[in-house]
Image (cartoon, rainbow, N blue to C red):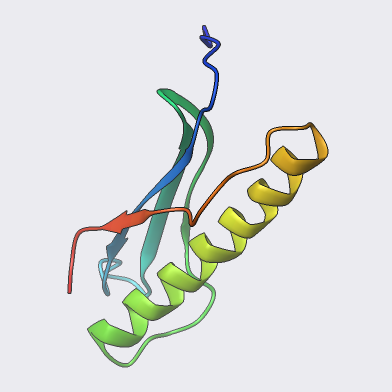
Amino acid sequence: MFYTHFENCSLLGYIDNDYAGRLDDQKNTVGYSFHLGTNMISWTSKKQSIFSICFVEAEYVATSLATCQAMWLRTLLKDISNVQKGSTPIYYDKI
């Protein structure tokens, strides 16, 4: 991987959720990625540990997981002297 250096990079997140996409147990798969400028710095894709009874609940759980990651990343960036100004936008594909 090659990471480029930019001054004033802002943190940006993306979420995708597959509601009841697993045929064996009907659990959701959630994935999110976070970018600092044009560089991806954090990502995950995993089956959720809980069963959501509706699409909206599944989206809420996925968004909550990504928000926790964004808060942790903001704290980490602050510790290495890259304070993020303003809020961190997180984009998702539904609702």
